[in-house]
Length: 162
Image (tube, rainbow, N blue to C red):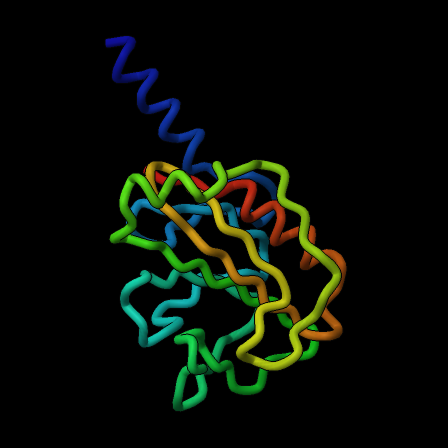
């Protein structure tokens, strides 16, 4: 009887809010993050299906009619103070190639660079977690506050794969 109770307690701790307004949120496919208040998951962030896109943003994302040449989304009306994060999951990566992805670190730091256009990421990271490879692209509007960088770092620190 103790084991099921312990399992329920662990599950509750994993799904409980991390702070005021922060909630562990599924990005799909067993990937979850803790999103601060004001952030939300963006579904259908790209017409590309492999690698698998997973995204979240501080604003309502409206995609332009056509993706960028690289398959990244072309966001219509990207707000000057907006933040958008797109993670590509390489679902067909070999174990051999996966070893070239650095292990997920829980101390992300986000640079001060800004978005130059909707198709150019401001910053990015590659890492492996849960035996899977991810390439995260960070898009920041020119007036994105420093708090957005700290929030993105905290979101990436909270990255979990089950």
